[in-house]
Amino acid sequence: MARGKGSGNTGGPAVDALYSLMQSFENKLGGGEGVEGLYGSITQGGMQKVLDCLRHNTGFNKSSKLVDIGAGLGRPLLHAMVTAGLEDVWGVELDSVKCNKATAFCGHVIENMALKGMIRADSRVPEIYCSSIEEVKSLDPATHAYSFWEGVPGTGKIAFGELFAKSKTLKAVAVVQRAVRGEEPAAMMREWGFGPVMLISAFPVSMSGSGRSFTAYVFSKVAPAAARLLANAALTAPPAHAGAQGAEREQQERKEGTDGAEPEEDVEDEIPTQKYTSPLGSPRKPEGEPGPSSPAKKACSGSVRQAPSVGTPPRSRNDGISAKGLKGPNQGEPQPASSQLPTEPRPAKPSKARKPAAQQQQKLTDSAPFSRRTKGDAAGKAPGKPAKAAAPASSENTAPSSSLGTRSSSRLAAIRAASELQGC
Image 1 (cartoon, rainbow, N blue to C red):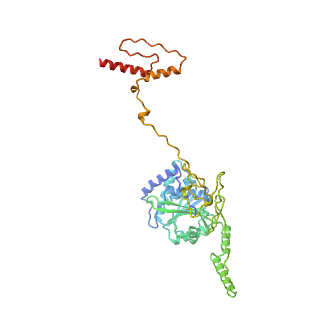
Image 2 (cartoon, one colour):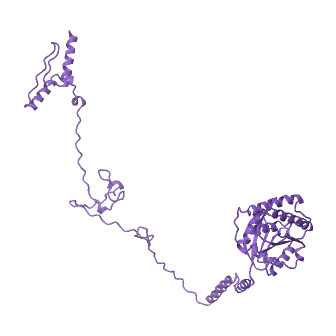
Image 3 (spheres, rainbow, N blue to C red):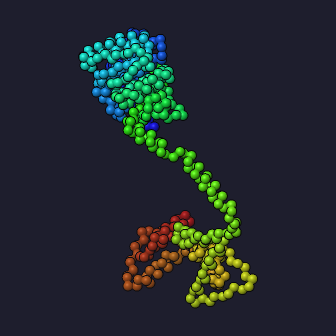
């Protein structure tokens, strides 16, 4: 069943003006209630969705003719005149009070809409026939029918269905009621006498004022030729339970045929072993079969392979760690006994004894001939260079400095001079 999508289309400014005018004049009439039946009309957006569905799926246009069963004040008919440009619309209403109100209501609305230029000035006022649907002889020449039939009794729905089925001009019908539960809507319409119809769309609508929720169903009449084709297909199709009965019959025949035969010995079928291939490409071994042993490793050149002695304990997983803490190719895995090679321990490197700090460092102030030794070494390393003349002393208390005096010797001389002055 197709579900119509909700739309924000309300018909345009002309329909907005129409509903504003209808609401104001309905209030002046005291409402659309009568003495019989249920009065109600769906909202502007809901009625627009119904008319849009008829136009898109059933050929509803300005040349169509619309009949409303249970017309009330005729609001759906006026809506169709404005939004689709229909000129030939009418309705059937059982309540005489509603019929009198509808005549005045439709005349007033048409007159005001013509004055505003929203419809033609010669537009005909919709006619509302005051009669029960059971007394109506025919719905021709209507091409489309509409009914808010929530309050219509079952006899009225059956009479409406018979008129729809025998009509030569009606092509589609739209009805508004509570949602159908547990039954196909098209099957429900056939029970009401509408004949073969096809559900076009179903969508929720609400009543104007109270806001009660209902569902609009749009049906299209199936052509007689197509209806006969569907009926013949339904007659020739096997029933749903025929397949189950055939399977039971075949099982019974097989059982009867095997009753007189000699029982066969039970022979266990050999289940072939299936090889599975892992994602890496190597075939997966069947369950219960031991895995292949790893190949023996080749000995390094220059080494002698020794057979393990009897009673040698197995090597641990950490035996493959070298002196530097690195593992071999098969890290952490125990190697076969045949591939274990003797390893000779490497001699430890002798550690150098560190000299005490007192021997490594000497204070310059404790070595008196430091400056002279430095001078002599410098003179011996550069024999070809003449020594520079020493500067004359400025005073008696100044210590003599050499021509090759260094920074350390200058400090020592200054310290010695300061100590002599203090001694004086």
